[in-house]
Length: 276
Ligand code: SAM
Image 1 (cartoon, rainbow, N blue to C red):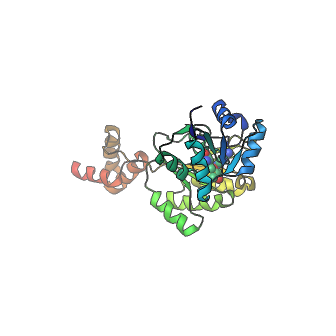
Image 2 (cartoon, rainbow, N blue to C red):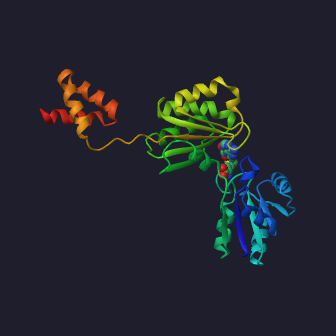
């Protein structure tokens, strides 16, 4: 195996999701650098791997990083793992990866489970563009400010959330994004009590509020982006608008068509004025 740092994804629940390559690297590595040594020893034991595990997180003292650098510089293989999922995704490792690359050493990804991608893949929400937000601030004023800043983003939004805050968070999302914005609650993905539920935010909030079990375990929230309004008025909308304007004041007709089509009310109103 080529010398370097191997960034190894591990299961987020179901151990069957470990890849063959991940197991090969974890078994062959000279050193396994882990966010939490106990969690990783436990994982390795499940696969009968008995290897040297070193604690590493982004606030580790320089000695841990140096040991990893020395090992790789000496032609060795280091596997970096987090407690679950893909390292560096709301998990430690960023500084280490940079340090190794800056020192001219190779860094290899060993891809696998990631809660954000798993939730997105089964969300039923658009995935062509998404924005990974990770954890929102814990304090409500800061969280509300962050959500307000995201309210107009067109991309699907992906959040990690702690179970004891999920209800507050859904309250704040409903206020910031509107009760009708679609969202997915993805809870305990790949585990025994896996829940995937897509609904408008207000309904999702009511669902979680009514069932204490939904406020337990690990949670990803995926929220639809702000719907983009079409720029041009298509023929059908224009015909509908003109017909309605025969029965209703122009502002009212524009509001109804805006509601039905997602077109901007002002644009529709201006169109009616232009028609005379
Ligand atoms: N690096 C990990 C990954 O690739 O998904 C994420 C680590 S982050 C510290 C932990 C958060 O990921 C949890 O609080 C939860 O939001 C999400 N998460 C992890 N496992 C999950 C699961 N099985 N189901 C739902 N969310 C999960």
